[in-house]
Length: 423
Image (tube, rainbow, N blue to C red):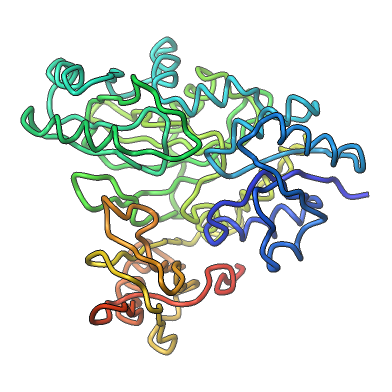
């Protein structure tokens, strides 16, 4: 009988739903989610259970019920907010993975900073604060510009660069106001940090028996300053691994006690070397695993599934291409009528062109819209990052966002899962 993996929640199905095929190549998948799966998802499952995934006792009980009928060999999730519940399921069923405290140490950015500092891992200076006055004092000590961010959110929500003392109160209010329902309010919920003015990358790795194994590095493009909206990524399969970068990633894993599973570590390059920005105990988001597979031939979803089942992965790069993703946003707040793509105008290098919003949805650019402000996505695969950039530039005019209140903007159409082209 094939292994059975419990998958906790599907969030942003279009962004990570394609990973179901990767996981399904290793094991049968049983979904634990807060709603009935879409038909396109249900057909790929061995079964599913509807449960409040943020109610940990209920989630564990649902997992035990499945385990009473079939032998469960692993559990995983790719949603930042569901990682804690996933760790509780792994502990309750005796499955591979890190404990809930390790997950919390990664999710709570202040605990992350404390653990990295104790181990001497390079990172920006950081202080946790409860008021705008405390934030001002911290920024005075650290020195401007500073970055303010929520203590335990993700995807750059609420993150803002502040360049002067007179802007600090507004920056604090922006970071303090960023909320996501399941995340509890903390009075000391904002970090004031040193700004590292250098290129930003993310490294997706697998960790087994405490040993770190980098899979690929993605170079990040951010926009909408002073915010840090993630508008694109590129993975270059020809790029040699950076030993210094990988040493810092491995040191971060060790400092946090992360010894089994997948990580997505974000870093910036300072004058004296790499600094850890944050450590996420999950697969990368924003289609980065898709880019990694297209550029290197390494399927992070397969690696994650094997790790979850306690099997040793053996990923072997087999490609040396470049792959890039770009997200499109409206110029102003609008109500979507439809997203249209003229496929005849897409360059051959475009592997994915898709809309991300349904008719009637109101979307806005950052900071109000954030990730939810994206209306389309483009993915290009070429021999070089420059080739990807040229293809993405050429593809943008083929995408039109039709609104119910104004003139069409350049944009993309379709459903992400339907438009995904397997490499």
